Image (cartoon, rainbow, N blue to C red; front, side, top):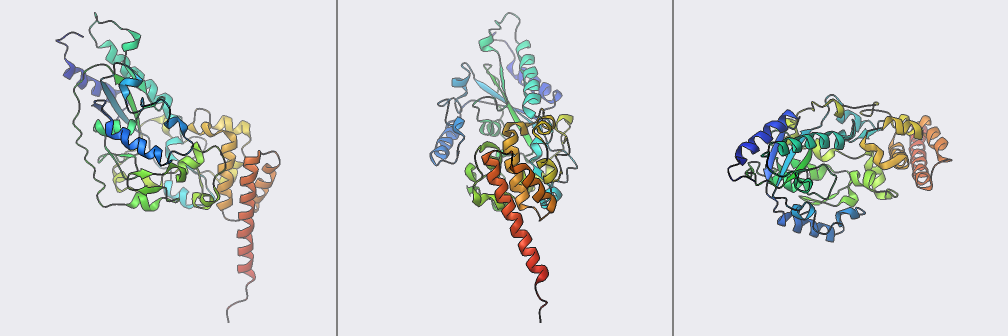
Amino acid sequence: MHASFNFNQLAADIKIWGRELGFQQVGITDIDLGDAEARLQEWIAKGYHGSMEWLTAHDNKRSRPADLVPGTLRVISVRMDYLPGDTEQIKTLKDPSKAYVSRYTLGRDYHKLIRKRLSTLAKQIDDALPANDPKDPEWLNRAFVDSAPVMERPLAEKAGLGWQGKHTLIINSEAGSWFFLGEIFTFLPLPIDQPDQINQCGECTACLKVCPTDAFTAPYELDARRCISYLTIENKGAIPLEFREPIGNRVFGCDDCQAICPWNKYAQFTQENDFLPRHGLANSDLVTLFNWTEKEYLANTEGSAIRRIGYEGWLRNLAVGLGNAPSDVRIIEALQAKREGASALVQEHIDWALAQQAKVNYRRKRKITAPPPT
């Protein structure tokens, strides 16, 4: 690289280009993740990663960017708002007959959109380099969005995008936490941003207390095995009995710890049409979604992150939601109709749901037939 090249100007241009591409913030950091690596190793040693064995793979490449992409000197970290407006979030969550789907997945899968934008930004950076510099594919800037072992939250924090809150997500004092993260690994010695987003969680523990399954073992520490997002998405087996009632009507992920965070009063609604709700997923009835055939499921989740759990996982999660719903003959009929052709995993959850419905029916009948107090 030519000694007179102006890296300060390039860094400023990168931030302008990033905003033009729809990113709300762009920050640049070095690749020292020693502290984060130690915390990750301690967390894994406790078994909190559950069945997510991919977190233990790749040696230390996750916490050492230059091992993942040789030659990496800096990481460009970006964030993009995703919260759709007018989704009646709390209303849906409090209606046990409705299906609650995590807000990040109501629209199209964010991976493709953000990766495409980041790839465009990476090419802009490549094109800004001196014309006589070799454009060796091994030394081009690389974009990542959950597509490789990257510690995106510690990198975002170091780049000044926010601080890691007690719920382990990144919080920004001017934007809350409803945003996606992405990264570009670069070999360029760009100037580093000095983080101005100091931790401002203070004494607040609202996110820890609101968790339906008590997944937080301590501030800044999450036992994924108890987390509803893990249980309904990453977990491929049966949902443990102890968590089925606390899950309520959350059928894909959970947003409780974000929804209650005081900093999210500053969150901005997304400007990306691709993140807006599709197919009524913002407030559909549980029984309506459960009655989808596999063909309907595939059609209605095309291009959605929901696809990753498959039809079997979808029915499993919805069966739990139906078991927690108010007693309804339509629910019982739907569960019974779907049981015969279902897998053993889904049948187990249907049987649990039918037993729950029977309990609700029994308690209701007892209340109706109980003699009036004397």
